[in-house]
Length: 86
Image (cartoon, rainbow, N blue to C red):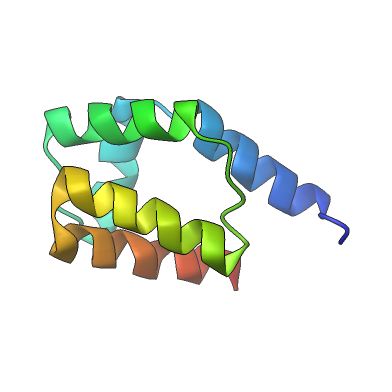
């Protein structure tokens, strides 16, 4: 399977995202995140190798994020990721 440059850029950004960036991106999409949750998510994303464009990998990531934020916020984040990957 060939990964496009666009996919590489998005996956790289997720791998290097900061908690402040997460909070900035969450706000316009009405995703409620605390500073502590954003820090834990950013740490998780930096420590995990994943491809957000692969449904199975994204599903596992959302399950892990749900452990940090709760299921409702994780669902909102998943909707946002799906929007960006389609």
